[in-house]
Image 1 (tube, rainbow, N blue to C red):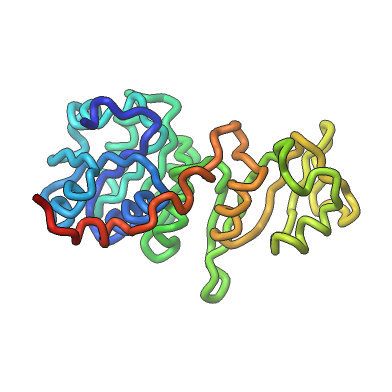
Image 2 (cartoon, rainbow, N blue to C red):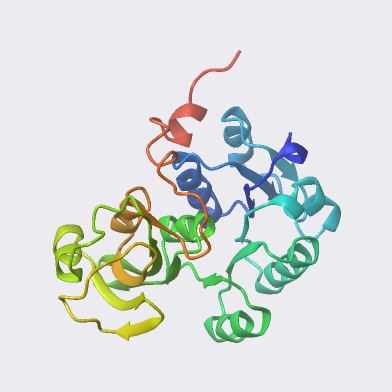
Length: 253
C-alpha cells in the first residue's frame, strides 16, 4: 500500500519521540508511512491502517518502498545521529525537494548539518515536543520552536490569502484577535521588521509571527498559508475524532 502514497510523510524510527510524532500526525489526518525495526507499536500502527515497512531505514530499497520520491516530508527520529544523517542524505537523493526533519542529540552537530545540508528542521528530545515536530513536517510555515517557561512557542512564516478575515485591518487588530506577535511584515516589496501597529494587512502579504502551536494550527485553517502556497491543514485538523491509540485499541476481526 505504501507504494501508492503521494504527498505523504515518512517517519523513520519508533522510539518514544517517533511514536508521539506519528500519533499527532494521525490525529491531524495526515497520510504516514513508517520505516522502523520491530517494536511493540508496529501492530498498533497496522491496526490503525498505517503502512509499516520493517527494517533499517538506511536501506535505500526501503526508502523507495515507502515512496520517498513522492513524499512531502521525512521525519528521521532514530536514536543514532549518524544513522539519521545517512537516512536524510539518501532521502534527498531520491527526492531533492523533500522536507527534512531530523533528530540529532548533538546540538552543535545539528546546527552545522542544518546549514551544510539545508535540513529544514533539526530537533532533540529535550528541546522540542512531538506536536512541533509533526507540524513542521506538515508545513513549511514553522521556522523555529522554543520553550518559554512551560509554553512551546513557534516562529512561523505565513502568507495572507484573499479569504483571510484580517485583510484590510491593522496589524494591532490581528495581534489582539489572534494572540500573536507580528515580527516581520512583507508587503508591496517592502520588508518591515517590527512593523507599526497601524500597518494594514493585505492579500498576499507575508507575516512572520510568534505564537503557540495551537494558534499557528488555527491560523492555517483560517485564511493563512505556508510560504510555498501548500494546501491548508483545515480539512485535516480535527477530521479524525479518535486518536491513534483509541482506534488501535478496538478489537479486530
